[in-house]
Image (cartoon, rainbow, N blue to C red; front, side, top):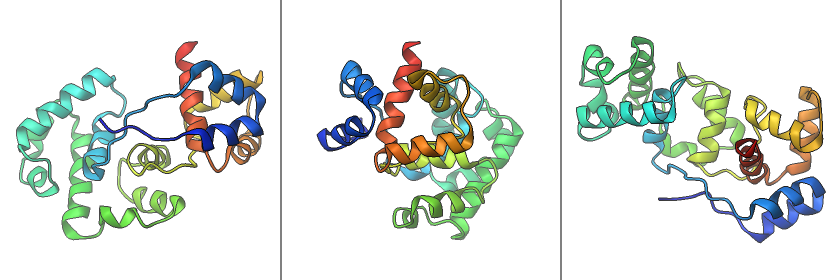
Length: 201
């Protein structure tokens, strides 16, 4: 299992910028969050897992892998919509999966090229795909490309974490931007601790 790696440099920088974040880090210690370096698998998983539980998503994904044997774009495209739906997916999700696979198969999307793009460029490329929004693209940046400075406004738990940590009743987009600037360039590590805070509540 590969995890998101960080260390004393990130912890020291965040602790120096925000005493409340320092307290959060001191209390939680080092966190281990799994990442998925297989970019295709990560994209397919993001579609499968939308609006269902983690356990259900794992079951559906296992069925999909069993159906196609080897998880590739062409192997998914070779299956009928009905076969893929039988894994536990809605026809809408089947359409999303096939759209991604068609983009990859045609060369319209070259996953390895994403590695060389900026965060904003990766998001811009991925949201061209049906079924992938900004939040999904940002999670891809964290949990597949392991980018260090992602704090997602679209993540409700992150926003609630900031509000809890700082004793806020609400959080505007402008205020969020200020916290994002404060946590930069290690916004991803801040995200890990904010998610952890939410799970403790």
